[in-house]
Amino acid sequence: MSSNSTILIIDDAKDMLMLLEFDLIQAGYKVLSASGGAQALEILNRQLVDLVLLDLHMPNVSGTEVLTHIMRME
Image (cartoon, rainbow, N blue to C red):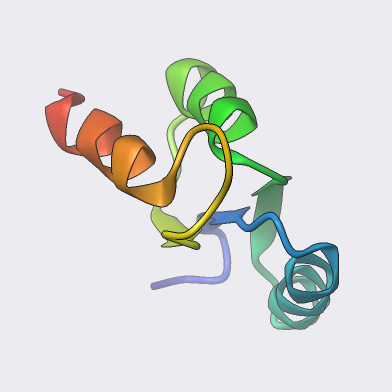
């Protein structure tokens, strides 16, 4: 994957989100972040990403629900 790639990080743990975001930006990637499943779905419906880093255990819209949505996308 090139450093021009866009990575979406989805995690309800703010410290993990910030840590991953920092490391990936330092590596030269474009990073989008979502603090939950609902926010992630909004991002995925309007923008293409190259990689998703997804926490499966989140309140409200779970990571499993987000994954199901991603698998149904064309």
